[in-house]
Amino acid sequence: MKQHLCSLLEEFKGQAGYINVEFTACNELAGLMYEWLQNADRGCESASYHDFQRTLEARIDHLLDVYQYAKVQGDQVWMDELKERLRQLSMATKSFNFTELCHKMILSNEKFS
Image 1 (cartoon, rainbow, N blue to C red):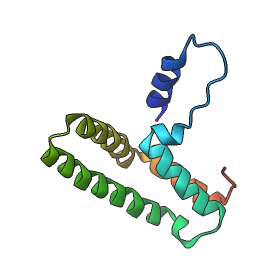
Image 2 (image 1 turned 135 degrees about the vertical axis):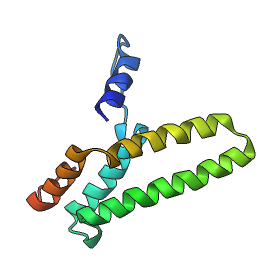
Image 3 (image 1 turned 90 degrees about the vertical axis):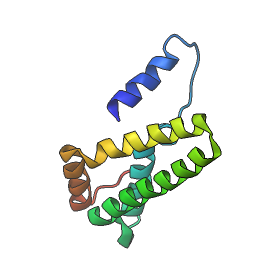
Image 4 (image 1 turned 120 degrees about the vertical axis):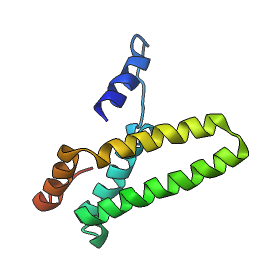
């Protein structure tokens, strides 16, 4: 996520004025984590770490299905966008620090918004 955020900030470097960018709309993992943390804030049952893992896996499965559809349609631009979104999520599934961070967030019951 850090690398994606840095490259996004680089895109706006040198532009004058105020720029409003929602990173959760630009990064698949950030968006998924934001949704999950909102549930944790509300004390929803679906805010456990294991539920996040299932949500992450379900999102990956969904994006793979959509990718197959885009492939059948021959839409290379859409396929490239989906590949990037899948890459962002697949990196999270391999990250021990990410797993530990999510677990700590649930245990600490901190407010995130």
